[in-house]
Amino acid sequence: MDLKLITHEQPLGKEISNSLKSNKYKNFKMAVAYAKNSGIGRLHDDFKNFKNNGGNIEAVIGIDQTITSYQALINLLTFTGQNLFIHHDKGSTSFHPKLYYFGNDEIEKVIIGSSNLTAGGLYLNYEVNVDINFDSSDTSINFKNQVNDYWTKLLNNTNTKIADIKFLNELLDLGSLLNENKQKSFKNLISKISKVPFTTRSLPRLPNLSPQLQTEVPFLKNSFSMLLSHFDVSDRSQDPVILIHIRALQKYPNFWNWPSFFTFSGSGYPELYVHASIYYDSTEIKNYTVRIYYYDQKKEFRLQCEPIKRNGSPGDIILIEKNELKPFNFKITLIRQDSFPYKKLFPKLTEKVSPKKKYTYF
Image (tube, rainbow, N blue to C red; front, side, top):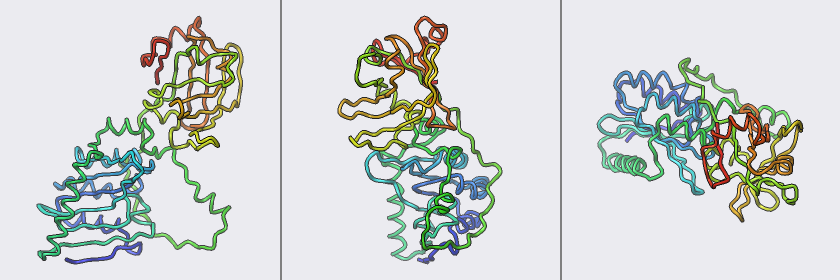
C-alpha cells in the first residue's frame, strides 16, 4: 500500500484532474460534505472527458448549513445521471466526509482528507489529504473492504436520497441549497475593518472555469397571497399579528428567508425583521418594519403588520410580493373583496387549510 500526503503545496484539484486523465480508472466516486460551482467548474472538462471515455461517476453530496449550491449539483448531475445522491440528517449532526474513490472492477485508489468539492478545498485552502494506492497486501485488502463497506452503507442510509432535477428544484425552493447568484462575500470588507496580526500567502493561479458551466436557477416563487380570517384582522386586538399557516411556511420556507436569516429574540422566538411597503385602499406606507416570527408555545408562524391587521376585513386577501434580489424587502397589499384584483386572485387560492384560510404561492 503506497501512501502520499497531499497539501496546499500540491493541490488536490490537480491530483484528481491527473487521475481522471490517466486512463487507469473507469470508476470515480465521491462522498463530500459541500460542493460549489467554483470546484465543479474547474474539474468540469475532466469530468466530461472521463465520462465520454466510458467512465462512471457517482457522488454523495451533503447539503448541511446551506453551503452546497444548486448550480454545483445541476452541473454535477450532467456527469452522474442517476448516480447523484443527496445526504442530509435533520438532527444536530453534519454530513462531513471528504472521500474520493478511483477504481475499475475493484477500488484501486482512495483519497481521504479535508478537501471539499470547492475551489478553496481543491486549490486554495490549507488542506491535508492522504492519497492511498492499494496493492495485494493483507493490509490493503482489509482497508479496501472497509472503504467498500462504508460506501455501501452510505448509499443504503435512509438519509441518502437520489437527486434529479425535480428534487433539486424542490430543495432550492425549500432554501436547503445555496443559490450562488445571490451569494455575496464579506471577506474583503471585513479585512479592511478588522486588524488581526496575520498576513496572507500568495495564492496559486486557479484553473479556468469551464465555459459550459450552468449558472442559472429556475424561477422561484416570489408572491404569496392568503385569505384573511377573523383572527387576522381586528381594530381591537393588542397584538397586530396575522397567522401564516405552518403548512404554508413548510411549502416554501425560502420565500420567508426561513430559517437561514432568523435569529432568536430575547424571549427565545426565531424572528426576522424586514422592510415593507404597505398598500391598502388609497394609502401607501413606505419603509414599514415588519416582524416575522415563530411562536413555539402555540406552534404558530406570525406576521406582525399593524396596517393590514387594523384595516382589513375577514375575507379580504393579503398579497405579499418579494424581490429575490432584495430578500428583506416586501411589498404587502390589502386586496378588498369587491375589487377587480380580488376576483382575479381569489380562484388561485388553491391551498386550503381550513374553511376560511386558503393561500397560494406564484
